[in-house]
Amino acid sequence: MNTITNRFKLAIVICILSVSSVFSADRYSQTRDSLLNLITGASVPSNKVEITKFGARGDGKKDCKPAFDKAMKQAARKGGAHIIVPAGEYLLNGPIHFVSNVCLELQEGAILRFSPAPTCYLPVVKSSWEGTFLQNYSPFIYGYQLQNVSIVGRGTIDGNANTTFATWKKMQGEGKRLSREMNHNETPIGQRNFGEGYYLRPQLIQFFECKGVTIRDVFITNAPFWCIHLLKSENIICDGIRYDAKLENNDGIDPEYARNVLIQNIAFNNGDDNVAIKCGRDNDGRTTAIPSANIIIRNCRFKGLHGVVLGSEMSSGIENVFIENCTYGGYCKRGLYIKTNPDRGGFIRNIYMNNCEFGEVEDLIYVTSKYAGEGLDNHHFTSIHDLYIKDVKCQKARGAAIVLQGTQARPIRNVSFEHVNVDQAATGLSMSDAISIDFTDCNLGGYAGIPTQVSAKDGIFAGDKK
Image (cartoon, rainbow, N blue to C red; front, side, top):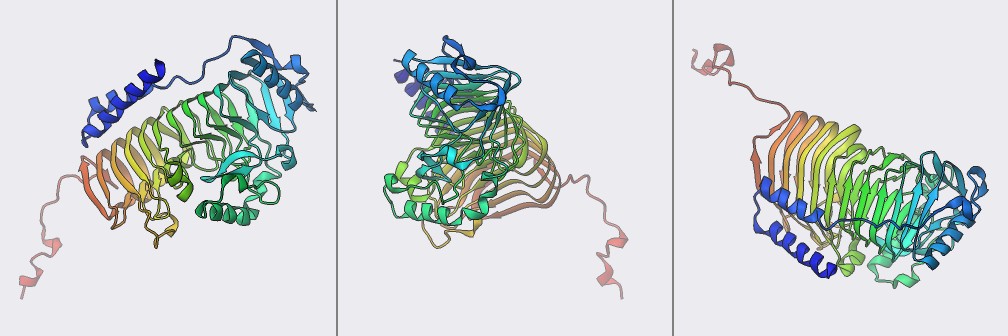
């Protein structure tokens, strides 16, 4: 009955979003609140047990992976568990593989410190890397096809990847090339085996095909790659997470083929994108055909490369994204960055940004269908339409306040800017292949006052003087 009810609610939400192309405060609130009713996150089991009961010791020396493995096995036998990790430093020479109905609580002062040795994360598991499905090193915390999984508490998750995985980017070229070739050639996923010798870094946390996920309050640092990857999962809450994750490609949160997601109260401090909404690369994405949808990002403090990114891996499409009441805690290169190219296809639609503020950026809002100059000879054009930006402020844009770059085949359309104010901008507005663009009470690079009166020094009549 609950599944039927939720599907009915979702149908109502989709109808609301498609009724009008005009930004309305009432419509905005009604749609957002309808989505919030669908998002509950994980339920927490009542069966509490301390990890120390399984032989873990928080001395930073003993390998505690066997203890976490035992705890998960017992949870599987008993139908779930609330596993409590008390204060202390817990070394893990390998990944934690979740089972269903588990809440992992990291209490204040608890530190999970993972081994930096890559061999600890073998054998390979089903995963995805930059939008391509494959088998790769296990994410450090991993769940596949689970229900009701959560990580909560004020403790720390330290990927400890500084000395190994963080150095791999310069060596990943061949693995990246091969993975994309397999994607484009439709190589069966079971034959896409990577791992040792390919240097494709694993994610810190990945929940893959999971329903009911909560990650709350933890502190994340030193991830080997993306910090939190929510892959083909739904009904997710990320709340109160704190970051100091500035290694290579330490994205904060990456929902991919994900739906019904609430991201709120996050203090980002990342070496890459803060939130990067993705939905598969090229052929894999178009074949999977599951959009990333119904994502609410609110009350966050952005700091890092970009605040919110859509793409560039988005070939299944992205829709119904709400970004509201967010500010900045430091530098961001761009506030909102929507990026795709003719390799991708798919769509980006029904995107709302409301009541957000930034300091100094390179570009405040950048929407491009020509990302990285790739795919320009291909024909998988992306349809970008129905974007609504309201009450957004920025102190300075060193590059541009607003950039809209569509393609002749698929112009960007139906974009509304209302009360967008940028104090200083090298370029206020740059548009190409964009139609039906509306501006209401916007100042892009300064504020004009009362016009000056004509005076002799203007030289208007100089040509009349003989």
